[in-house]
Image 1 (cartoon, rainbow, N blue to C red):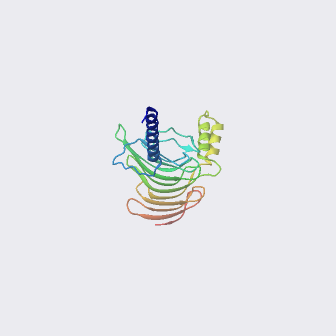
Image 2: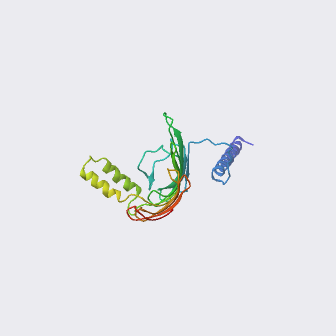
Image 3: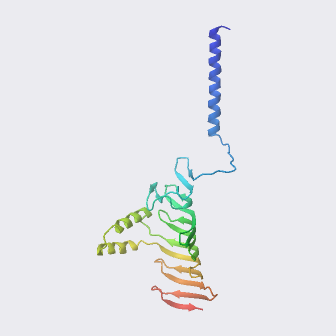
Length: 236
């Protein structure tokens, strides 16, 4: 075999070897193989769709995201809530599972566990929550209506503009108008802060109209309330 034949042979070998390596690497990254880990330590995981749209964030507190609407952050700063945050197909926060618990330097503690699902372009319309402020705790299910025609981001921006106004009659009037967009709780079922078991049903304006309770001493009651909060009928 002459030198030219040897060179052609070496070039062919190099080409075949390179091609095999490329195929191997491509297959490794595009195949449907599963990787198994016994332990995985991470600070944040983003679950995304094929187009890159975020669908779920799992994170520690420091790396948790700020509220998001259509891909834009608003409201409070990131780094406030460990847990999982859900997003809809439009890149808007859609609920989540968050939790925390700690004592301060005086020995008082605060703890919360919250699983929520958001109304479209609004806040938590379904909430299963435990909130404990140094022993003053409540835990239960809450169903809440939010206004239509205004998103969480729009409400937040309006609130910030009014909050930055100087104290005046104009500020008070603006707050009064904005308060008409406050959420209205329709149902609560759980433990109240006073230790009673409680179920409340409210009208479209958020006014409690029916209250069923069993207090901490075991006394049961059913109250029917009027539109101004007065008891119009009671069963003891």
